Amino acid sequence: MTLKATPLNAVHRAAGAKMVDFGGWDMPVNYGSQIEEHHAVRTDVGMFDVSHMCVVDLEGANVRAFLRGLLANNVDKLVVPGKALYSCMLKPEGGVIDDLIVYFFSETWFRLVVNAGTAEKDIAWMQAQNAATGAGLTITQRRDGADAMALIAVQGPHARAKVWQVLPTTEAASKEMKPFNAVIVKDTAFGEVMVARTGYTGEDGFEIAFPASQAAALWNALAAAGVKPAGLGARDTLRLEAGMNLYGQDMDESVNPLDAGLAWTIDLVSERDFVGKAALQAQGQNAQFVGLILREKGGILRAHQKVVVAGTEATGEITSGTFSPTMQQAIALARVPMGVNVGDTVHVEIRDKRLAATVVKLPFVRNGKILVA
Image 1: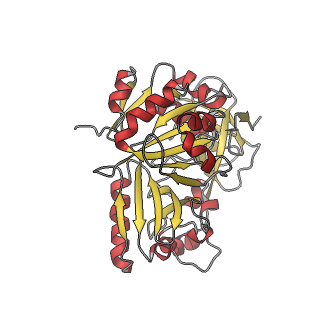
Image 2: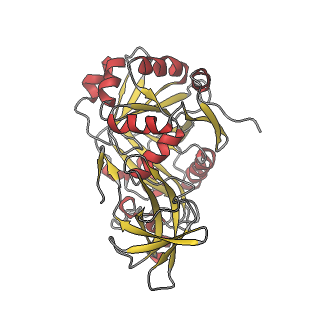
Image 3: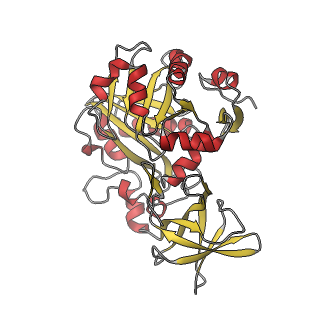
């Protein structure tokens, strides 16, 4: 099978990146030391090629009403142009088709950024719903073709200053911008760019969407300004420390989002109906999503390991696990039975052992600070 390539593929290879198959995409896992890349984002600034993700523009007179019924979070919260919202898109049975960010730019234009591996099914689902509801929208993917966009995430405590150094015409529009907002700036040296104060690392920074034809030029300019390239390995340890879900691991079409720690993204309060609402109301929450810190030596925490609740027959499961470079401890995200409390000790089955772990409230790390003991 031929792997898909982002517009930055040649740049990664020229930099000596270790490339891997990531859901059918040829992507850099690291450029040397994954640990150094991780620490660069926590303490200074790093950047990720996220052009495998897909920008989708939805345009038309009925776009707000359409998204009101499509997404589990409520787009009526979006009233200021540029405001963004994290949401799930659900199946009628309540499982998660994808998690995404939706940006509001006008009453006739909203923009979504969806996950790489789900983009085709996401767009097919949106097109089917568009037809079924008679919304009459134009739905345009911006990952391929003449209007293709690249995406670079610049993250870390010095991220915004470095972006302004390379994209000085974006500073005035984005300097006072709060998290989960975006602005479109037309007059940059790299064409029209969308600068969003969002990210997947638990650090401040921007995610930048811009013409794919300018991908290598902007990446190289950021690198020349001192922004350290980082690969998928550091991206995973950073997002896990930040307690952020990964689609396909922490949730998917078989998982009720209430059981995946995503209740805060589900609007069950308003009278608004949306796809999957009735199923969630009927199912309710049947598990809880927590952090674990391994307290005994002898193993590393990995997805699918069984979590045993002390004194009961009840079990849960680790959904994502790693060794935290910031904390220097083995950590995990896990789905566990209701009634397990923060501070409880549980046991994780690792090979033929049961090792003690402490239940903690997520996130583990945010803005460079360790938040759990």
